[in-house]
Image (cartoon, rainbow over all chains, first blue to last red):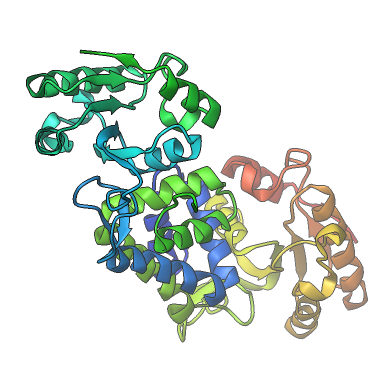
Length: 203
Length: 203
């Protein structure tokens, strides 16, 4: 006798949810049953939002922050921002965190991660080559590396500083106001503000 | 100047995710960006699974467990199970937990919750009236109340026992093998097995 299980459509949803970051098997099951019980009023808007991501959103070809497809980038196409200042961050969410600190009015460059040999993330997986090209063509006055102060963040900062050395453009990194081992996720806006204000010259 | 935010499609997804049980604003944002970065390969199957719930799955009209639309109920239509034994549970997930314990081969009745005045859950919100009717028409030999041993579970068990008294059918509840204050979510299969074996007669 095969043991009883949920109907296949519910099993498939649990499988999908379980594979998302931060959701274990129990949370996935609880979530799937909650969605089942709440019906189309909840599942349809969520499904629609998921499908909209692929059709309506893309990454800006220059800075890597998210834009609506076909729309101008609110960061790159803003003439009030200093186009000769480039702030390098690991991920798009970091852009919002820096914007909310109010300490920065230049451009951004989203790397898409940080160097991590253990996870097979090499320089080719990050937008480092395009950063070097961008700095060369922009006549940048400074590149600020706003990366986490964990081991991978420090290693990534060192690698990028080295890659930018031939351009002669000054490279700085966030001040040591950041807590040791902390990612940008985990600091408040004041800490970020202080870290930006007290940034240190690297070369 | 309005402060920078994600494009509206990403904001809408974050809003949808944030409203799910167990997902806070930070997890919702992280999940939305993860989905955005992984693209259609991840969002489309998840969206499809969500839409399938409403079109492919329904609750069995008798026991309340989930079935594929139009299909027979694997529990109610199984002639090898004892149709005169009814086990009452709070939610569909509890059916699977009891099945996995291997201690039970009767029928089920999913209440759809437990009595909770604070959350405005009254007897009319649960399938208690249909349980009484079902017991009357089936000629049941016993009704087992497999509810959590928290305050609401105990109150619900007491209310159902009272409602079934006129039928004259014996009503039992799970043995005190369950940890105090625990819901069926939180006990292992062995504890459930022992609790079923040692169930106590209520009237």
